[in-house]
Amino acid sequence: MPKGIEMEEVVESRSTDLSYTRKEKESLRRVGIIYGEVGTTQFTFSVTGNVEQGDYVQVLHEKFGWVLGHVDEIKRKTNLSVEKAREIVFGKDMDVKEVLSATVVVIGYRDSKGLLQYPRIPFRVGTMVYLAQDSFIKKVIGIKEIKNTGAYIGRLYRYRSIPIYLDINAMVQKHVSILAKTGAGKSYLTGVLLEEFLKHRVTAVVIDPHGEYSSLRFPAKKSRMHDEFKVKPKGHASKIKIFSPDVELNEAKPLRFTLASMTPRELLNLMNLDARQYLIPLRKTMDLLKMSRKYFTIRDIIRLLESEENNNAGPLIAQLEYLDEMRVFDKKGTRIDEIVEEGKISIINLRGVPPDIQELVVQRLSMALFELRKRGKIPPLMLVIEEAHNYAPQQGISSATKILRTIASEGRKFGLGLCIISQRPAKVDKNILSQCNTQIILKVTNPNDLKAIGNSVEGLTKGSLEEIQRLPVGVALVTGGNISMPLFVEIRPRETKHGGESVKVV
Ligand SMILES: Nc1ncnc2c1ncn2[C@@H]1O[C@H](COP(=O)(O)OP(=O)(O)OP(=O)(O)O)[C@@H](O)[C@H]1O
Ligand SMILES: [Mg+2]
Image: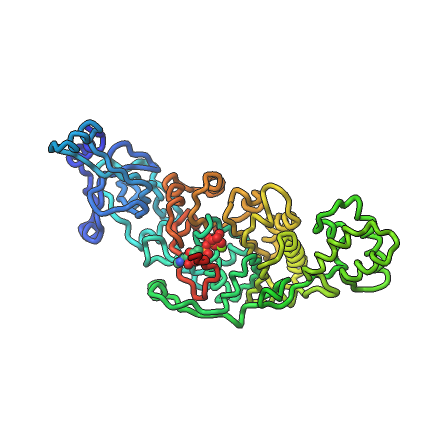
């Protein structure tokens, strides 16, 4: 006979459920009885009521009072063997015994000083287990409704009456990572965060490789979920500024960089050319131009190269022609204080821009933001980077990696926050990811990515790591900042239109 069944019979004769007041008992829903081996951090209970994996439960400890736990796993144990199962197939009647056994990870209780503690003596076998009350969950986990400084991102998963706020100061000071497989809801959630930033007059710059975020200007279509989560559809057209190097493809203001601020080597890095062969002619040409004028263009370089006798410069000229077509360089660059405006969100739409030019944009812009922020010339802000594995890869190089690492390690001192978004956590630079204190993880299934997450998230239980692989769209595991332990959160509906809808093929 399986162990679970045996134990249930034992515990029923030894119930220690004596110390509850009658009133407390009546208002709580009993779901089981503790049995088996009981540890201080984990125990199992035989399920007698309605309880599911992921539920919070509360148990009265004889010495420490009420303690909160989280149902990490539920198993159905039976005495039905394979042989007996086969007999059922052949029509034989069989008396099958089964029992549900739940594993609980102990979260703890608040002591008289309000500190989170866990009971240092295990619960007694036979102690009753109850579904936890919302107020008790909030108290022990420390969930606070910080409306003034918090971003309302959604509700505790399966507990719709408990709203979850993320501390915006903690996010900007100590960075954020949003990780999940494709289609799990990263961009949707980033949109939610940006809406909250707008409400709290927090400035942000968004690197938007797919042109998804311009839709923050428009309200979402009203749905039943808006009422349930107490939000209203609303557009933010007046607070969204859009810039792009490609204004023919994208509805945006032009984003340009000054050529004079580039070194010849940086310019060569953007080209598919052997630096040893072309660095000297390019430097000579740029030096000549710099001597005669303050601003010059790529066309000026090409003209000068063409006028020279030495015609080995053919490939260099061809690559410069390509850069000229990209139109990222101009006599005068776009001013950073024109891009960044307090309380507004600036979207850098890179749709249709080739990868090398995207890297250049991220590098130049990040450097400028860091320098100006250091000197206090622009307001504190959040730099949001979508598809971060492209700009800060763990392997290979990107011209933007260095400055992004600097911001990750030093940005906190200057009020420049990073929000890193990626569908391949294992492929993002570890130095940068490890600096992200607020971690938001949606569904992930790739084993390498799961390993990277398991290694980087503190306090993640075995059950939670399993659950991450099965999360429905729009549910996220959140930890860090003001959230002291990993919590599953159902993300609230968007107030603005989501721009990242999948394309219907048929
Ligand atoms: N919280 C949510 N509530 C309702 N629907 C959602 C939610 N999150 C995502 N979705 C839906 O799932 C789809 C995919 O979401 P999203 O575009 O955010 O994925 P993603 O993780 O950014 O994917 P990718 O890596 O491909 O960019 C969206 O079109 C949206 O309709
Ligand atoms: Mg996306």
